[in-house]
Amino acid sequence: MLFLSPSLTSMDSPLMLSQGMLTVLGVQSFCHYRERIPHQSPLIVISNHRSFLDAPLLMAALNRSIHIACHHYMSQVPVLRELVSGLGCLPLEPQGQPSKRFFRQATQLLQNQKGIGIFPEGAKPMVEVSAPSEVYPFQRGFAHLALQAPVPNLGILPVAIAAHEERSGLSIPLPLLQFFDPSEPLFQQPGWQPAVIYRRVSLLIGEPLWITPEHRQRYQGKEAKAIVTEITQRCRDQITTLLHQGCYERSSL
Figure: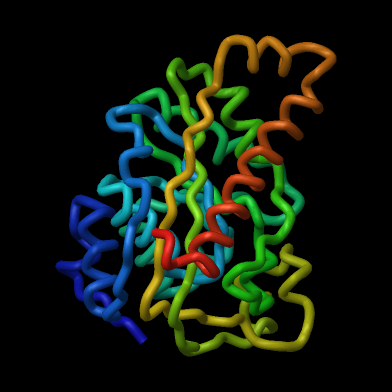
């Protein structure tokens, strides 16, 4: 278990805290296609999600602080609450409630040229252990955010996180998490929350998808559902391809 000292949690930069966590836990990470990373642009960064280390890994790979959406319960659990605060995470609303506060906070940050991180697979990876190459269906919230936010030059950056070597950490009983967030149906079952700790992991950067006036025009009309589906699927397809490359074609990297 990682214990945070007051000096660590008081760091100004989520990036510094992320780098410190990865160093303390001995995570060896590799970043591929770094040249695809846009600089000095507002970004919505999306990736597959299997570990609590995914957020710090994304920041370390992009070398910038990113405000990452996290599950509501993470802002309620002692120690974990301080960690997500230090990482600059944005807790989502409880299950079943509209994400108005998150959308408002995320939009303001994007307007200030900041980065937002979203794991589109949702909460399912928190209660199921998936294979490193598996990608769950994507929820569409990130596409709605990108199309609704009145931010010019906004890009969506897909990133695949491919684990090569990992171990299991301290797990938490799911009924205990229900105490902190009774609204989450996934916690209303027996079992344990898996804790994956990477030893060696690659991050593969995808091609950014830039939101254009044409995208937003379609979103305002009869093609709203179609453009949201199109953006969601394009990003998932790209992450799936990169993840396959990272897991099975490492010799080509």
